[in-house]
Image 1 (cartoon, helix red, strand yellow):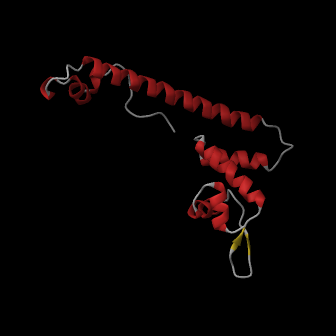
Image 2 (cartoon, rainbow, N blue to C red):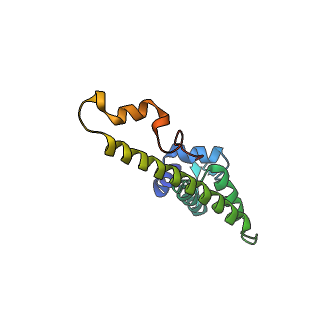
Image 3 (cartoon, rainbow, N blue to C red):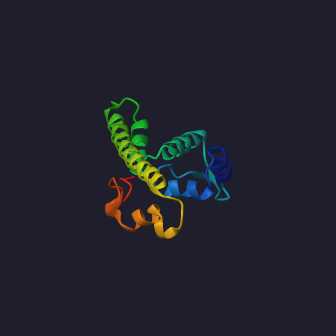
Length: 142
């Protein structure tokens, strides 16, 4: 199939297909006599794997490692387990951070008298980080 057909079937842009090819995540395609890229179903399957893994927030390095494992089906899957365990830990850290942020926003709303800005607790808290209940200066590693 052409690069356009592949991109459409995978739900990505043509530029994304080219970028994944440049990154070595999908193999260089065969070329027609006119120089057009030609992809088989195996590349579509691989591209769908990459897209799904990206949608789940996996970094490219982990996707690359998982693709390497997928290319070696008789290998033990302990490395795949380790990759997902590491990502699960990251997601849990992000959830903790988001819950702390949620609590802070709820408190800001509760404590704000909704009068004039000069007495707005939201503005006051955002002006002085020490008034916050939790540490939430930046999201945890992505």
